[in-house]
Length: 198
Image (cartoon, rainbow, N blue to C red; front, side, top):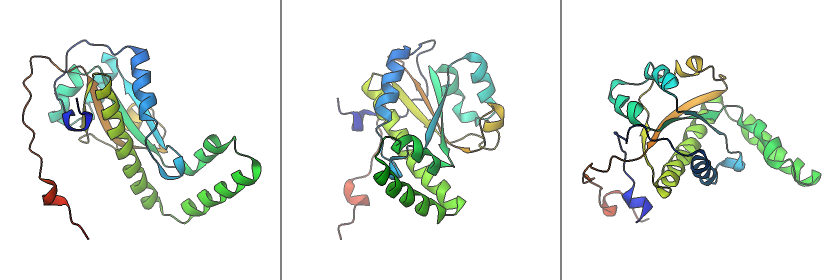
């Protein structure tokens, strides 16, 4: 099976399937190898599995995304850390002092020169990359996913008491595919439609 071509956005999952915690951790570990600027890994995942929290999340979701919410094993809220440059201490703490000072200076100079809007744009890019890595990792362990951008990004932090420094980016529903579902054909453009050789 080719993970890249077999991945689909699944909107209805097998009800009441719980992902074993050890499997979930493996999915997340593989996800953590996604690339990011300066390897700062500015993403945070808030994972909703309980019915109580799913009901809370329903307040934020657009109506078209209710099926994923009701049938998924979990809803993964993906946020980006606006204060991402502060992650350098955790990432590079084990470097020898001289090398650490060099990389810290580069990181500080880079992010100090950026506007908040530019930092947010970079977070959207990086969290988009890690979201795809998450979906492919889930597929590798036999699970299906559906990315969801249709939710109220102004309410979600307050609803789940998530710090404002975390910027809501995307929600990924994850679960087991309903086996009786027929595979629908998914139209894809030819590479010649979007590739331009210079």
